[in-house]
Image (cartoon, rainbow, N blue to C red; front, side):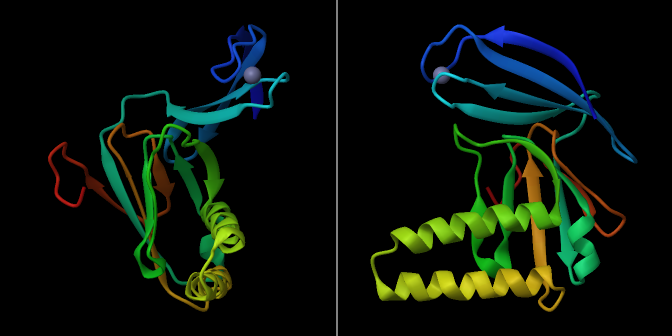
Length: 180
Ligand SMILES: [Zn+2]
């Protein structure tokens, strides 16, 4: 991975004219060139990352059945416009205005979910919610160890996301496809 371009840009959070925007280019086997952008403001700490594929991609939905610990190493590219779901956990990460894009792997996706559940656990007010968070953390740990089957679904109307594995099923995602 190399940094190809670095430039100054205004910070969307505090207006500092000297926030930096850096681009990193990756070549992902069987997928192509991917550009990761990182916007960083040293004044207020604002950080935003995203990914973009450099060739035209079609809107797509990827489905991967996770059933072994080796699956943790499967590459995942998630742009800020993608929705990530693990139906077995009842977790859906939708693209909000603060959504971040990243190049990672299945384990990285599960770690991000784990972090979100831990945050929810800290702020949970009811015992039931705390208990559910604890259960979710145990289930995520079991998935990571390959002891629990789960499905990872990534849908991206811009086509900038992918799960890079022969095990992953790819479907076209129409603009008016159901399940939205
Ligand atoms: Zn700032």
